[in-house]
Length: 556
Image (cartoon, rainbow, N blue to C red; front, side, top):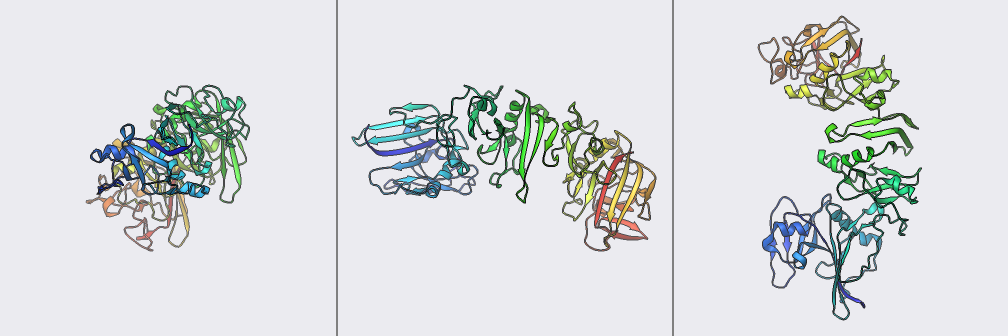
């Protein structure tokens, strides 16, 4: 074919919204459109601004990229919408003998010779499925092109590896010879793999023993095969479905669909996706290994001899988690570890009697609770098996401006300030006979406790009435809860107390008010020594604001 005179590499996509565009052609003008969202590639530029379907420089912002940047959009070739990644011509205006860092950031001028930058390419090609087009003109002036129907590169963590090119087509020879999904990190093509590996173990047993990104298709997966990271160096054939390294991938502000579909990069931070995880773990019997490194740099691991996730109908329930071994504590104390049948623990006492004696957050499912199991804080160190349903520490969680549904559903964090939720408390206290313990610390730092030998809350029809509150013992000097025995629950939007006004508004928190209280552990948290609107207990006709409270239950 001879030497190349001009090369342009394109990648396509579909997108929306133009925030700014200028055209490099002679006589063109500058256009600016004020929009709240940038298009993610040139295809979306074209779709959002069809009246300006001319080639030129536009602003885009791929998913996850920190800021918008300029790209050259070709709207003439094959329907338009092509994002140009590279251009070379015969004027040698740009130097391409560059360092890794320079290729990462990009260089050149979009109107002439340039390389867009590997970092930008990694974000671009991982947000959608892209086609790659290479246009060439040789020294004789003849034009050629090549297309590849699936183009994708990895991130910096794996040195921007060419993960996929897809099927070749065009008028020139296929000069990008890529090992479709089994290229080894050394750059050599890996050994042949099964035509359709269902997991990394299939690839490992075919003779491939090098860690890296490979393509699999689990049984039942009807879409295109997908990439996973295979750990081959430790026992061999591990399929990685989660990894955290440096916080570069957001795990916090993700919704159901994101966790269902998966996000991140196989070679770096990722969540593979709940649907993939379900299909993977239901095609064979799998074991689970969790590796982690603490803040002191000490590595640990946890092994479970059986691991399975349910389908979306079960809300991707952690159905099976087998026997634990490892060099760390068993932090994944999940329902299936309590009962071989897969039944969840009904309270913290079930977990305690199974042999787990460490305080922490665990998952339970009380009798009658039809939704997904939920997390609770279990106090194992004091007598053992206490389920915590209320805690105040520093006022960081609002208890005051909460309405009926808030107190019904619960709020806060199990490991910090919380109200577990009236519906959960009702189901918990009606499945067995429970006793109640209230711990609190006054403003002088003195700890107290109150014990009641029976405790039960009614259902919503009774307005979550404090139905049973048994005999009192403790070192508080007074039975502060007795005044609330038999009282329904009151919130600022549902007044069930005996007072002429609404005690939840007056005393700033939902509670089993009478008219109004001698104990109000859900009141407005205050740093003052005495307050009528703080977290309160009456004694000696004075209202003391408390520093700390915790309410917990345990079977009798």
